[in-house]
Image: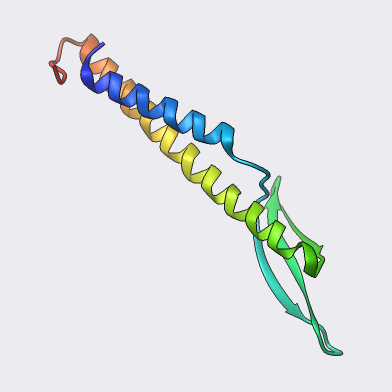
Length: 104
């Protein structure tokens, strides 16, 4: 195993560890909506299986939903990075198999 391969595999292992440590999550965006007769409420909007969904969120539960959405965004970022690293590793392994020089 060369240095580059080792570095990529170590980074993938770090991402996997961080992914397993993530807590509760949900997709969507949270917004405050105004009522016609005054006051307001929170709703979370998201798409799932090609359909748009909107859920009412109790005001006392708003911080929890906000944290879940933030966790989901981190999950998406980590999985994007993981796929990028897997692609880079695959390309690197192909170059090595073809006899090109990698990093010593």
